[in-house]
Length: 271
Image (cartoon, rainbow, N blue to C red; front, side):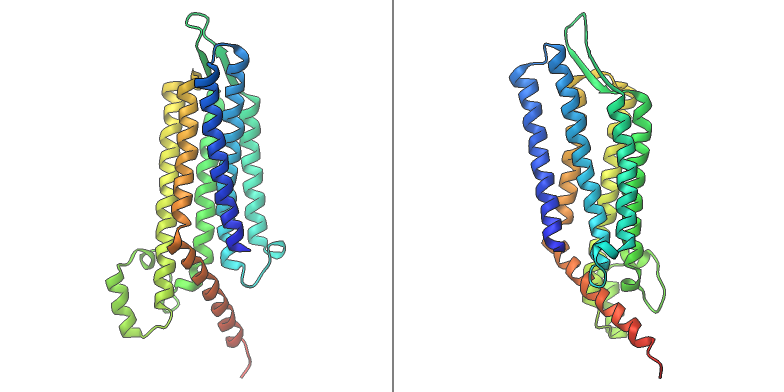
């Protein structure tokens, strides 16, 4: 089920991206944005498909949180999963509704060119919420994996970024049986950090362009390109996070979670 859900989200993200590209090609190249109605249609195509695509990316991040807890709790009873999903839905709904209430669509009376975008007062909260959700959901994922990567009861970020040679030496000394699993999970966490930073940095740069240079009222082609680059980059990162090695790491997470819970139960058995 976990694998099916992840596959479904990636497939849905791909379909939305193709719809986005096709719709923009038809509007910009096929129809030509020579009337206000076509200009308005372009604005709403960008707003709706951008919101849907970003929502799927957020759901993917929440689903990764459930992967850690899936071996011993269902989605209906996973309060971390439910809380993360409610947080994501509330925050994303707020910024999406705000953007939909303050779109910008106009035809330049001099050149006759279509100008679209969202007003500048919407850009800042949109950016803040987007970055906060990306960081918070990634941090929750890290927090839930602490028991798997603890060494001698201690936890630090150096555990994630330690070199494989150093880790191999520690394995030979300590004789840990879970070392291969830990290496796999550490690689997944490293990719998660890089992916989160990659999405955040690209989103920040694009919103700076939108806010300071385009000012929320740019030529339709520029605004459409900003939206498309943002969602395409998000798809690239998600695709990278779901490659074969990451899938194996998710399986290792499930196995390690079962072993951790079993060990905790054994420790609580009275002597």
